[in-house]
Length: 365
Image (cartoon, rainbow, N blue to C red; front, side, top):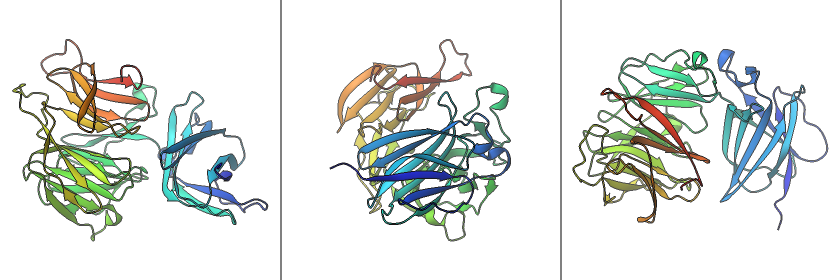
């Protein structure tokens, strides 16, 4: 039957609920100063994305002068994930908030708080973590104040954008994104490199290449002295972690081909980690040297960067489905609309030139 819904209102300031039909009120919890998304003059509308099982819907409403804004309808009496994005008139995202496993009653007013953040990018370096305004359209306003963390090798944000995780040596440094304050660091079992966060924000997985292990951290205690790490042996050198849409498993890329390594023919492998049990499978060969992997959020197909062939391969259940030619690439990410590749520009110097390529889904894959 049709999905029942109710009116949704975003509340920028605390206000009394209205009578009548049951409603969901969202209070936007925002940072102060320049990190507040609502201070971006380009913000003109909000988009609401609801995910319930495999069903996804998107609704939009334009921002006016009132402190309340009706966006649309949401399911009642059944859990769903909600993502609220603030956008410019051209669709550029300038603010983002997320809440998971939300259940709304159809018999009363429901009020929740969403941590609303600017979309920022973070790049690790030898002496600092560079902060980038992902919504900037001018190069002069792209870079924000860097974070004083030296020796950073990996960086990932919780999917609601509230906490940033940086690996630095044998330490995991959590950073509160509302004011970029360092929280209590976590001592790791050995030197960490890559780090990834599960889709439900419950766990972080950390690559330990020298120990050939993957660390598992419960994020409920991150930033406090109670945070702990357990480790899983994976039988190879881990270099990338990706998470499934159902939040139950992670894939770890082993023995990836680095950009400077020769194409010797040695195959990379992948290990599957069952997140609820914390157990890892035996390594499975990918049949070729692989630089990076990603899971397509549309259907959980595995995407492989094959640097020795300059191809992007899509496989389902271990079977090659399709390959497309790509520029020389060593990093890959998948969004809802695009595959984003990082590689070397044609005719680059010996030092190399990092460039971004975007491959729209449906055009070749």
